[in-house]
Length: 136
View 1 (tube, one colour):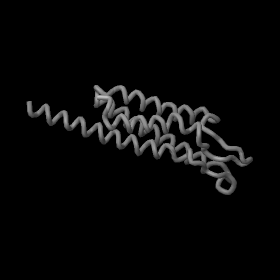
View 2 (cartoon, one colour):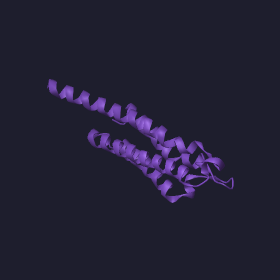
View 3 (tube, rainbow, N blue to C red):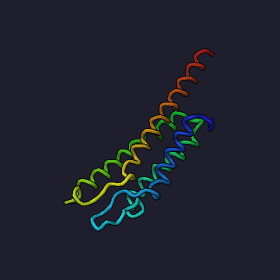
View 4 (tube, rainbow, N blue to C red):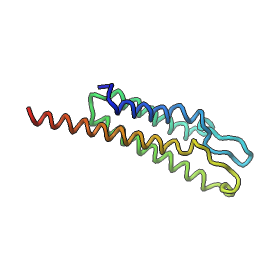
């Protein structure tokens, strides 16, 4: 059923991963220029992959098990994206003194929170269906 609470959580996660990286900058480089997700293709690909997984998961509402698995894969993808941000911010020499981190670097954390909430609601629905099937 598409009108469930997990649909709202997945939609918010898709908006966070698909739209907000174009609005908020990720970090400021040494020259003072703001770096957005579209400046690095691998970061853009990870963000858009996360948004696509969320949208696919929304429309897999009839198969809750695959919806749950897609949610977990999306969480792993967001952890990879977070790891890329941590590596990027700590690997460049002099980066700590010069650059400024943007709010775009914490977008995967917000996405992970909403994906965990969606998976929790999916699991709750699956348990409810199993308990009803037991009564038949």
